Image (cartoon, rainbow, N blue to C red; front, side, top):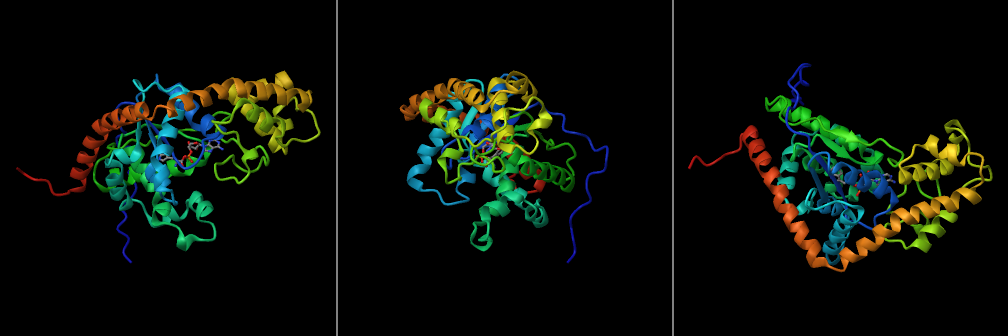
Length: 353
Ligand code: TYM
């Protein structure tokens, strides 16, 4: 078979020269947890004053696995409530449901024709999520990272704050941007967005198993702290978190081969805006009898008010809907012209009238 794949961009092709813009999203597919907060939401809040932020509820992505239609709208509002409760200001950041800006889906189709099957075959998240039932997975689950590229590039985003598990999807986004720019003779048209992943909250692990990611789909609720957990539940989960009989180490090297301890130290650091080394300087040599209550107090102080605010927003769905509708209008103002220009580059028919 002839491969019509054009050669990669020559070095020295002009780089994107447009403004800085930030895009990210969270799926409405189950309760949000501490990993989502530290890996994503907390970063969004820190970035909202630095550049325009387009932050959506990824409902198109959520339906790549079955979602009960009767719950979708409420789950979408719940993620929006979490955004707002975490400290996003809807007058500054643009918050909206992904499916309400239809340009995402149309751009995804164009990118489906840019991305290569070989690229998607390498995606580890599809392998994890489809497991032994690849043939019975939705086609959407397979092309999921292509839609993610569309979400990002439809705004010509330059930076994407995410947890570490999204790194490979961001690399694919950059590959798609580069290949589109090449294939359609538009050097520098799409930026190659930077993933913003660094920091101790980039990969929060399960409280029961330091080698497994904290996840919505873990059957044990004790493995994660949910943003809606009350203060007692948060404390209990931290007290019962798996550790070992040794004290907290005094150096970073001492965290090697102690994944559960490493995780708790990382969570402390992320919540307190400290490095792991600073946390170890404070608690090194102490037992978990001292460290866990300090961590529980910190987690309750940071998270319980967010849960309370979420409940307040969720008791006023009309207000959340108003903010989401306004956000979708604002997002469309950026996305539609990019889609139009992209359609022109692809060569689609346009009325001369
Ligand atoms: P989702 O909904 O699975 O997760 C939302 C965000 O939370 C981060 N995250 C974590 N961070 C640290 N530790 C963990 N244990 C942890 N678990 C989850 C994720 O990395 C993510 O940043 N594909 C995305 C949604 C998406 C998106 C996008 C993101 C769709 N389009 C465009 C950025 C740009 C996802 O499934 O996230």
